[in-house]
Image 1 (cartoon, rainbow over the protein chains, first blue to last red):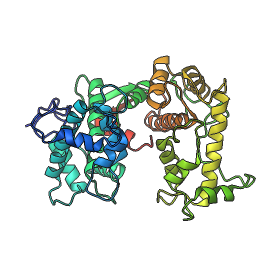
Image 2: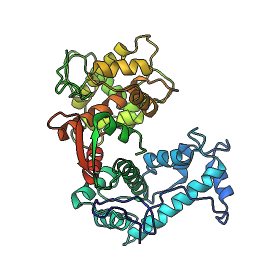
Image 3: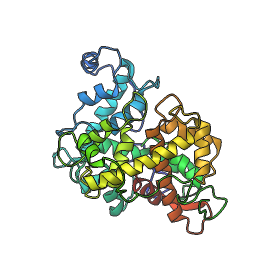
Image 4: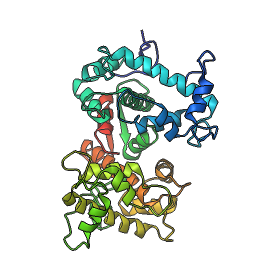
Amino acid sequence: MAYQYGQGQGYQQPQGYNNPPARPPPPNPNQPNLSQIFQAVDKDRSGFINAQELQSALSNGTHIPFNEETIKLMISMFDSSRSGQINFENFQRLWAYINQWQQTFRGFDRDNSGFVDQNELAQAFQQFGYRFSQDFIGLLMRKFNRHNGKMAFDDFIQCCVAVQSLTSTFASKDSQRKGQITVGFEEFLSMIFSVRT
Amino acid sequence: MAYQYGQGQGYQQPQGYNNPPARPPPPNPNQPNLSQIFQAVDKDRSGFINAQELQSALSNGTHIPFNEETIKLMISMFDSSRSGQINFENFQRLWAYINQWQQTFRGFDRDNSGFVDQNELAQAFQQFGYRFSQDFIGLLMRKFNRHNGKMAFDDFIQCCVAVQSLTSTFASKDSQRKGQITVGFEEFLSMIFSVRT
């Protein structure tokens, strides 16, 4: 059971068993052949992986290239040098993170179609501890799907990370856990522009 | 002088002489050779211009390709068929819109460097009628510049359109023009995900 603070607001800090991967996990030394994978992905042998190299190495199970926004998001999460590139050490973390998302995604793709539909997305957020309306789930589906109303693995990550980030931002203003915040105009804009989405 | 409602909140509806292009302008029949330009941009002769074609046709005055986010933003604004592509009629509107932005940008790029720096960006938003803090202008600069702390034409459009869109969203919740809104969690997320940024 996920830790849930302030029942009734429809949100919580992402944390706990059912929740999506919230923080970069530590490198797992038992992962197979990561060094070989890194070298294969690092096409220009620079010792770093850039967005383009990562995109060409990842598959979302469709014929459409892996979501660029998701690539940028993940690189920005693991790019400790802020160079827009990933070294081997950070690649190990990134790889583990992607694998965790894949397991999460497969758990919600009940019919094994390679996509989550609107119902499956609703169930995912419910299990993450959110209580969203059907209208809002529909909005997420329209905003983040690139496949005629179904969400592939890469879009699913983008959607979940965006919701996670904005949840943290909202929670930081909602110290009494009312599920409601009062914000000024510049504060509102700052909240949005400070967050990775 | 721009129309300004509710003095003191630091924002207004984008409108008026000094403001950025807020709405798609009507086609201007006096624009030269637009049909030829369209044909040159439409490399695959499909009769429509897609994001890739538009990107390769536009220059931001640097060696870096035109900002993809700005391309997507503009296509979504003028793609009346929601196909992700632009026909000739909508291309005329889009072209006029880009030209208006170019004039706006040049007006703020006082030293003609091809970039606006943080001071010039502050002046731009002041002229648009906003009263932002230096901290916030700094945040915009970090978020939207792709050129070592200076903002090129394409990033400037992305930044201004994002602020414009979020201003409208904020204003729609701030019916009494207090410069402050109270929103619930799902409402907050919906505001953000409903907006083009």
